[in-house]
Amino acid sequence: MFDASLCRADDLQQLNDLHRKLIAIQIENLRALGHARDIKLLFANGYGRPDFDFAGAFSEDAQKIVCEIFNLSHDIAIAEDELHLRARPN
Figure (cartoon, rainbow, N blue to C red):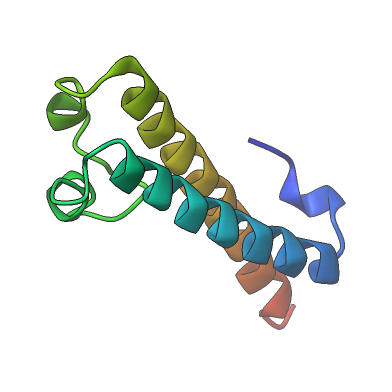
């Protein structure tokens, strides 16, 4: 987690783009570990709300990837909230 209010808008947008790319890479890593069919069920409620009970049956490496995706998605949400807040008229 980070304090998005300290970042410039351009930096927040770049950060979001990078985080989305990292999430895509981590999804591919889950596929490589043999969880291609599980991804849809695991993230049925979005990347910010994975089914951690379901992920508990995965290997330790896969569980770490799920946690990383969860954390990245929360950073994206924080940055997007800050960008929306700045876009509102005072």
